[in-house]
Image (cartoon, rainbow, N blue to C red; front, top):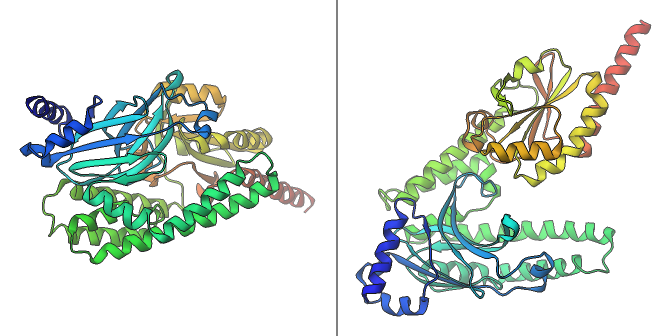
Length: 434
């Protein structure tokens, strides 16, 4: 018993305000058996998880000997960004098993990820959404089955195991199996991708219907969790964000001075502000000016750089953003074809690490103006533009400083730039004849 109490005390000291702890593997069964006799046990979560390496994981090069488990909490603003992540606990995966003991005095949403650390590079293997709450919670990371915990069990039984969700999941599984088979043609893959998109939309709608059904539940913590889980769609919709803020503020009367709720309200309000600013950046309005430094340390003002050009693409990207880097070949093609005619690019990175930004820029061979404030999504430039996800870009008419198009990607960018300069060429030819 003394050993258990000492272990709990140590972890509570280590976690501090942000509940961060690098956890040792524990004898979970022993702890769970003894916790009933420990008074502070009510504020402790024992998380036990298991994972078996599948053939698909092996094909991707994952090694069971080089896996870690990380329990984290995201900020609401953008769960796909690297910004605003609180690491609650981290430990090695030993023989496919994970055991974490962590402070859980405040019920909140969290994610458990298994990560490969081969060759010093982290890659997600799998993950599952969880509720941080007192008690023993067990997770099968292969089947995503969750048992234990009042709130974890509620969401698993009523959502993941609900008929609507299981039906869609089964269809998604069959489509993915066909997609990954050796016999499938490229044409069929395109069809399957389209089907998958529709299925994910269905799943998202079923999820939102389930979460909406909780709005009348008497338990304020359950209602808070439903609002926190939400869907990705509403995080980009101003009216949905405003409604969410009203619902959360109403909860404050039932959960006064509750840190997870207060923090969430602040995050949603911040997200609302970003969406509002993003909506200001539309076709027909002037581009917002800012100053930022290049890798060399030289400061550049956007308006100064635009001056004297014909069209400038203001591109927001980051080293860690795969879709951003996939756009670079198209950016290079547009630059090489039309730079001499007056087209240019002004890029701004949302990186927070100078070396990572520098290395990615070097790897990609960027030869246009490349700037950053190294403050990510919380920096003044990202806030000025309301950037909550990337890639994002704005095509600016340099003469007027006005946005003429936005979020041009791939071939759409090449087509637009060609269209602009072909029109300019025809207009110039006509004026010469006149």
